[in-house]
Length: 379
Ligand code: GMT
Image 1 (cartoon, rainbow, N blue to C red):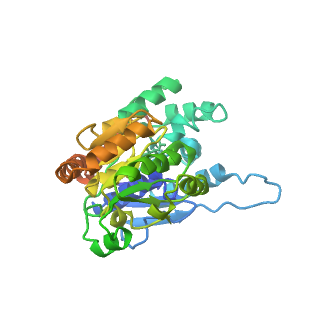
Image 2 (tube, rainbow, N blue to C red):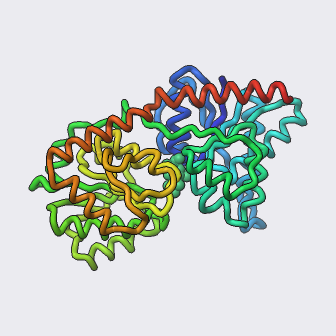
Image 3 (cartoon, protein in one colour):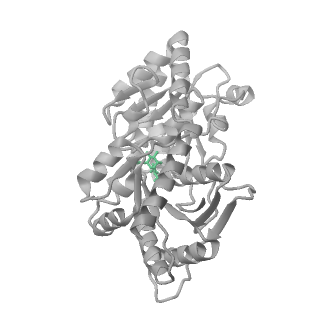
């Protein structure tokens, strides 16, 4: 198949899923065309089946807000026509789904019919999408999509709750490439971070409010009173400086390292003993899956789609959002007993294997074929 993928080319979860999906489809012989405003973060190598088309937005002085959606739709029209694509797959509804609809309508005037699949990732529904600024357009474009997928059953339920959706939503969970994400021997790094064999706790995120990064620091401060430990904070975003201040207030600065954005997250996860995800809301929790693939158990909130991934008492623990005391107690419970920690680590990997790329990729391929066939009949 010839597939056009539209996504945010950043480090965010939806961009990562879209890029990894495109790479895997290309490996299987499909031709994949990325249509984005920047080279996707993880698309930094050559493959004969991968193409990148940049959306350039011209900045006319009249525009306070450059019309990205129009530039994107125009680029989609161009790429679909000249590359003869079979399907467009847009990740994150805003503004990709409405731009795809616009492109589809324009292409009809050229006698070209192209179906498009929209994948809902989370905040496009739970935070931004349901805001009344965007809601009518999001509802419309979900209903006009030829196929809609959600990354968890919980996100599907939220979508049906918040929007008048007539379309069927297929749940296709996020996946992990276990060839890349696996525990690697990184003893020198471990020694540098934790020279006295302290336990290593890791948090990775975009440091937005929804991630409750302050809870990470608070729960670490409780854990650190009982267990000799280090905390690695990976990523960057608006809450980072607040977190740094909180470390000072709680007297844990010496044991917390802020590493900023990192390409090779799997290397950091390889030295970790526990992953922390106390998010306010999380449609799936891809970062937790990446940790589990590297044999790292997860302490998380029990919100959104996380319970579909983290198995309470087996691969980690879940508590109510904001209950840092309970999170800290569960973390201590796992960390204080070496045999128990080992068991949790094994369980985390076993669970991650259920989300292996090789199992999830065919779900997308079959769905694409289904959507293409269906749209041929209705065209
Ligand atoms: O987590 C974020 O803020 C980034 C966001 C995104 O759209 O890039 O992540 C969402 O999509 C990921 C991939 O499907 C999911 O694993 C995350 O759970 C989801 N984030 C939220 O729902 C907050």
